[in-house]
Length: 311
Image (cartoon, rainbow, N blue to C red):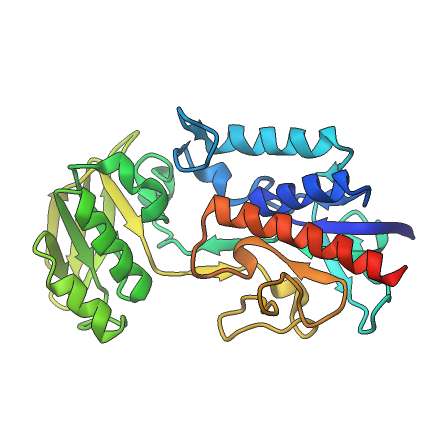
């Protein structure tokens, strides 16, 4: 059994920021990166909206630098994932975690930063062009398509919100809704239908994303008539939801109906003492690198204060 003050499960901006703060507080954190070291940002080409990078930075480079910063203060970063946890119910109890290589750890505090995974359509042409014009975050990447024609897939509140956001900066937004109506709230639907440069297409799905290196167009299919249509676009935004990576904690931590971890008030505290959650695993509203980093900082401070209160 490896005894720890702080175990961080998951990397990305939340995990690495938590590690920086925890390491500087002498909590000697051990961080397991998870299956996707660096998280969602490793699939993003340009990050233009993170403070401190006036010329922008590509996602993988930013994650490497965050990891190096965490390691500089003594974080033990381990490439691998936690396969099982047994969380203590009482204050001061030790939380047990087992890594995929069989390593058993006992931690006084755990910071969960396993993130969320964007849902994609699963088409080969879509997967090939992820980072080349296919994106799951309009707020993150929409700026690169200023004045251009783009398309968005989805019919919920997030899709409606992102469509109207894109409409403010792009010349035309084609919105593909699989059913005959949107799932979005009436208020959001009205925003979409009242925006003149959004072309709303019902009963429409993506047949193929066109382009070799970057998105050049889109072939759509009407799922009632089978009729196909091609349009020229430079960006395709998928807004069909995210899936929080919380299966590991099912039955032990409180979650909402979508599987996001519930934290108390303005803290990162979960329903179990000494267990904290940061980043997209508990945030379905903002989902930005900078907000994830902010909650990573909060989680480390919450963990430090929890340990201080035990002494």
